[in-house]
Image 1 (cartoon, helix red, strand yellow):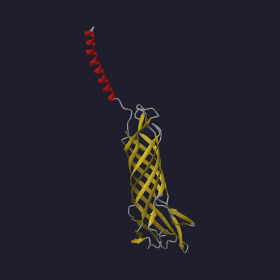
Image 2 (cartoon, rainbow, N blue to C red; image 1 turned 180 degrees about the vertical axis):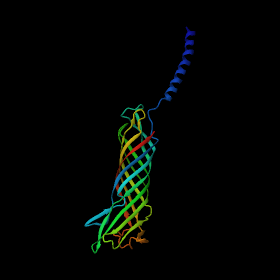
Image 3 (cartoon, rainbow, N blue to C red; image 1 turned 45 degrees about the vertical axis):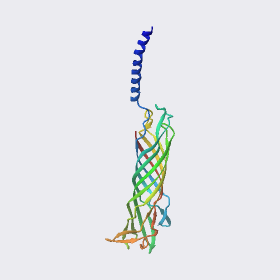
Image 4 (cartoon, rainbow, N blue to C red; image 1 turned 30 degrees about the horizontal axis):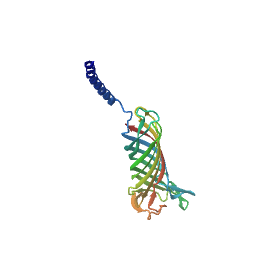
Length: 278
């Protein structure tokens, strides 16, 4: 009886070892069910309302309060995860958890266009001075976002903060007069590049959630952002009648706002799409 038992052990042990090795190899080839986000690309558009508006003049008897940061916003951003976390997957992925980003670095740029603040000021003799203002900025910012997730396939909420520079794309004021006696001219501003800070809160909704990957390739998001920024005007070029001269805020007789500081602070709401690569 001893020899058959020994023979059985000699045959069974190698077979068991081979089966165990094969099973481990097959398990290694299976997906884990978790595919963390490698990076995300966001594109959005929105509109900002001037937070610290200034009195630029009058439109008849009505005061015109405006901020150069008020207007359309277009933005594109790259988000890089720097502190991923896992949360319980209520939608039921293979792993039971969903890899989401707890903290991410966001680098962004875009285009801000402001075409408001038009005034019609009476200057005597029945003449009206009309000033049309246009400003545009190209923001280059860097910030951090911290988010919380409500589960696989469910929305997430994030808060963010950062800062950067707003490169001045165009800043001009076109001035004309109703009686044409004074002609017309344009102020072309050349302010130093403004530095600004921002705070944001956002809401994201997955549009293409994959339970097996525990992630979504496309998200819809909405973001409210507060930007604090000031543009300083020291001197500028005035072009009219074929001539160009340099004036300052104190020496220009047709300039109603003598303050060198121009508010660009605003509160904006943007809607956009987010692509997640995982």
